[in-house]
Length: 362
Image 1 (cartoon, rainbow, N blue to C red):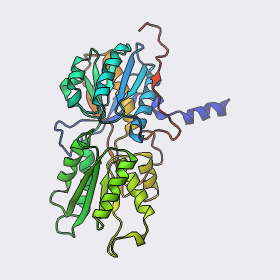
Image 2: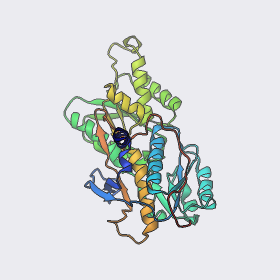
Image 3: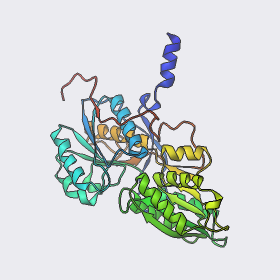
Image 4: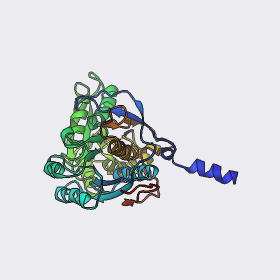
């Protein structure tokens, strides 16, 4: 029996053991390379009522939102609250996500956690919602939401650019970089690019091309192939997780005989954010650098924040922070244990969690 108990303790995910989170509060300026200090926030130990949270995601077809989903499911179960998940189908699905905002209210949820496909396009739908809306991952104007969990995506771009600028300062031989940030004007991409370009300004890093497209494997592979054909002398290829994954695969597949000229060389690949494929590429030494904004931890934080403010709407910033996220990690090698960033390999999307262990009615 003692061995069984020890085994169960060892396999229990860390997030279930306590309600303490490492967080950073958002900078006062949206376009700021500086990060705020890392502090510890103690969230609710348990929900006082069987709250039901309605989570809206752009999609669940990649590691990013799947990892957010696992974190939300873990925290909902730990707190004993309900969770209902809907996915819009992609970043072009503004009409569908607006419909889902209404559906959350019809389902009897208490709050909406919104991973917005397009904040400006959803403004009216958010304002008309009878439920409190919390921003999830993708930033929304503060006057539209009660609170938000996420990271400053300007910093995600800035960190990659800063790493390059430090290695190639002004006066050193120029290096050529191409950028594949993902869908145009969607999610954090609209601030990733300014962050990246600000960081390389004045250095020997030259941005020779930027290609934008949906985060599907097929589209990103086409863009990578286009870049490698048009720019055979690239030194670095910077992209979102899907772009980085297909770039590593494409470069591994190509042999030296495929080069356009004898002077062609393979660029180093850097990832703006992480995925299981990015993590494997780091582990194999196929990727030079990758950010992690700890997506699974963002899911946990979002649920904890919503429960905190549902239970204590007048709470101050110390008790229930309104704008926060986990620290951004910039990694040149894979983390051995990564339960705060990525979903478990065998995890599949969970669309419903029922409230548990409450004696009061809803």
